[in-house]
Length: 283
Image (cartoon, rainbow, N blue to C red; front, top):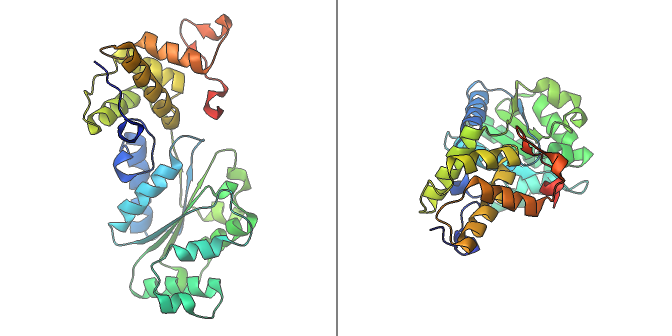
């Protein structure tokens, strides 16, 4: 029987914690390409993905993966930051000693000094800048300046910028032109969604077959393979199944939860497409 659990222990919570990162094929491919950027001493890469596809989770996973390869990795989310604050926040994320932080020099000089130190040790510096398209203009310009700089102190630095497809055109030309790769994050297929459901259930000590094959396929279709939406729908379906005392989550239960989230007209249902996704992701 599906059992209910406290929110802190429930599967599909969608938290940005290391254990919750699912190494599915799209994620592993993206991480492999980021590793290639470091190995080849490239200066810039851009990760493009729609809302909910896991750019921020990938950024956190990249920090762990690349840090394990000897890089100094700094992750900064630029989304919603006010003008003039990004550089200080970036410096706060470096492992600088108290004396260095207290030096009476400009923040940009402190950053250059740190990049120079790492370059002298032949240690790559990776700056993962999340949501560049949603950040202030001075941050985007500064990140582009780092990626395009030709001075030796910048030679061991790599900028990884994450953006949405709609925001890509707003990224500075210098950043887009310098990018050695553009990594496109794709939605999960039905098979990848089913793998994730089983993996997440097993991670929490649950039976990995609590979702029937038809339920997993239905969930993947309704969520459009978007990880954030997969998590939300799966979490609600588990809660509904626990409330009903059901043994497993079936396709009918997924549809019921979906209908409660997004009331639809009969015309929105077809034999081949099921319920068409609408604005529930913003709810």
